[in-house]
Length: 257
Image 1 (cartoon, rainbow, N blue to C red):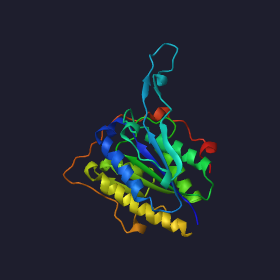
Image 2 (spheres, rainbow, N blue to C red):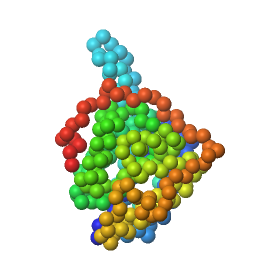
Image 3 (cartoon, rainbow, N blue to C red):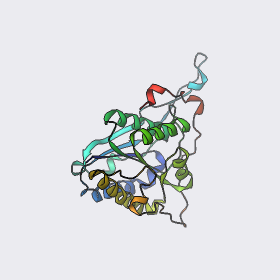
Image 4 (tube, rainbow, N blue to C red):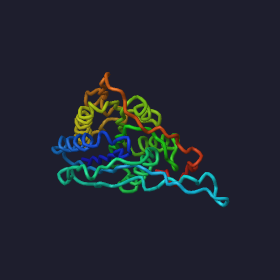
């Protein structure tokens, strides 16, 4: 029997402002629906970033006029048994800032990798409505390579919850197969399906099963992940271009498994 470690990364950038209460409510509903799951541990992290303006001087490199705040991740709780998880509250979730999506995913993967043994069953969930715009450490290709290594060498399963076509396609762009496309009015339905599929995944782990491959998370629960309201226009406000010239080269020691 193995524990299931659910690690959720929740977008707290400014584009989530309109959905603040809905995000809190649906996350709490998700954890409530998992309460009966045995041997399941949950971690919740939020992410957003801010660009800090620095006046340009004759002695400063022009590429450093804007400096990305590196404190992207904020822990709500980590490695808690489900029965010990407390509800997320509105004061704990305050959307603001930009969307350093690549950096935040990469940093949380590295943190989780260091914390858990190599054979741990990890379900890594990204919940966002926006597009990458301010990462400085990870670009798309580097993150895609890291995700594939965690899937292939450690057996992790990744799920991407994206709102609107552009945010949705981002999950595929860096190699995640379990992508759920949802609209804001159907967020609850999407989180309900995530809970059902998580229960199936955790039950398989608990009895020593393979818990499916990373490509079949929703299929194993006999679910189709999409929840789209055709009358609703996607609300995506993250439009700034990524600072590709500020992305550092891949470090093999940093990303090695």
